[in-house]
Length: 217
Picture 1 (cartoon, rainbow, N blue to C red):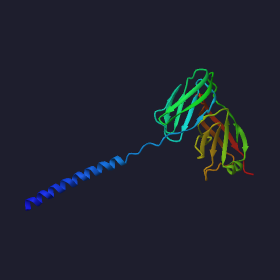
Picture 2 (cartoon, rainbow, N blue to C red):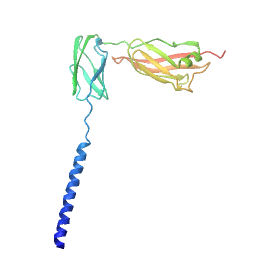
Picture 3 (cartoon, rainbow, N blue to C red):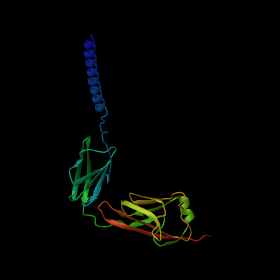
Picture 4 (cartoon, rainbow, N blue to C red):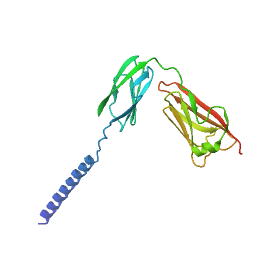
């Protein structure tokens, strides 16, 4: 009787061990998550003219997989795909394909762009004097505009090159410096908007806009 009970106990323990192994295997399979599908959001430029040495930036709502293009070379980073030339001058029907869909984009390819972007205006101009710091602090921002869409970075610095601490962004044809509380600009001080931007063809421009604030009244 004792021998029979011992055999039954060993058999029961073996069945329990097998049950636990199978159960664990099922849990591992359940943890697998599929990537969210990626949908086309926008293209920059969306169409029209593009230089033979230009680039096209395509934005998705999620990271795309297996991206291919009918012309140029594509590079994917996160939710963005960048298509770089050279493209052949003339009509361009660009087909973009990825794991979840396709998108057609139409352009007219022009001669290569060799002209660097320029600063065309803004809140202050290079060489300005007697700039009212109170007005700028009240607006809480400084803007500069460019001759074409650019990407890159700008910063507000002192004459000696120290960062003042404002937040700089570049989007389209506008560069913006936003005031951070406690970092207001002062009177009788020389400031420099410094940085580097480039257009879609890779032409770069060093940004250097110097202005001087007026004295206290």
